[in-house]
Every structure is written in C-alpha cells, then in structure tokens.
Length: 231
Image 1 (cartoon, rainbow, N blue to C red):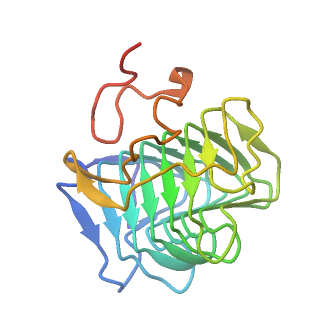
Image 2 (image 1 turned 180 degrees about the vertical axis):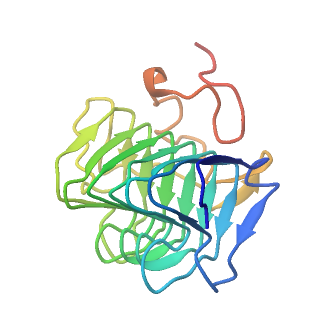
C-alpha cells in the first residue's frame, strides 16, 4: 500500500521485479496522493476486484515510467486500474495481463495519457489492451497496440485523441492522425530480456522503426537510451 505522495524509483525492470506471486495486487495507491512509479517489473498481481498490478484510488495522480507489467490479473484493469484519478504511462510495456475489462490498463472517469509504450497479448472481453469507462479521456502518442486476446485492442466510452505516431493491428483504437496506422502488423518479437530490460523488441522491417514523433518523445526510452537519435 502506498500511503504517502512519493516517487518509487527502481533501477529498471531488469534489476528489480516486484512479484505478488498471485496472492495479492502489487501496489495500491491511496486516495489523494501524487505518486510516480519508475523502473520496475510488476508481475503476478492477482485480485478479485480491480487492478492486479496497480490500483490507483480516488483523486490520486499516478505516473508510471520505464516499467514492465506481466501476468497480472483482475476483473478490471489487469495491469493497472485507475478510478477518478489521472494516469500517465510513459516508456512502459504491458504483456500478457488479463481482465474482464481492460487487460492492460483500465481508466474510469479521468484522464489517461499513454506515450512511447507498447501493449501486446493482453486479454479481456472488453478492451483487451486498453479500456476507458465513464467520462474518461484518452490520449495515445507513439504507442504500439497489438495482438489482443479475447477482445479488441481498445474500448472507449468518450472521445479519444490521437497524438500521432501510433500503430495497431486492428481498428478499435480509432487512430485518425496521418502519422498513425491501423490494420498494420507492427512486427514485434516475443517478450524478452534485451539490452538490460524486459521489452517487446521491434523485428527488422517493423513499420514502428523511426515512425514515432519527436514532439512526443521522452528524453530516453525504456532502456535508458537517449532519444531521439539521428535527428
């Protein structure tokens, strides 16, 4: 349980894994706090309510950066569930998380921003990779969303904003920016340990290579490599 405003700064997903061993969720962020979670591998969280990896409670402001979510499960928000609290996800990977709704991430009645992050092979009947419910607003930029299991990639109840540089292998995310692409295979390799972190690396010929927008580019990627390169 996170009971005060804090920055949880891990050394990176390769160096520190927080494993709930399918006995509980990994983090519960109490209401009204401002919390950053960075550089962790969050795995095997499991609950029968919401938020297998992280539950962000009322009015809490949560930022997740440079982290990997794997094999977490809950009825809502397998990786992360945020209720009436804004959520920002940067340079993070969500793979093989499971829920009834929002396998990777679910936001309810607040703002979700996803930047330079990858969602793959998450499972839910409603929004296998991403789910936004109630009066939730969503912005995606430089995101890759693919291989939904048991549902579509994305499910929203309110309008979605395409920040550009996105790729999905279906159409449910509703990408409209000319620099984003739907119905396109991003050509991603399996989840693996590579370059000192857990990632879903791009295969040769991937349309995601050099397709991200520098305007939305963080100073480093999930591995800590400086971005953009070659500009």
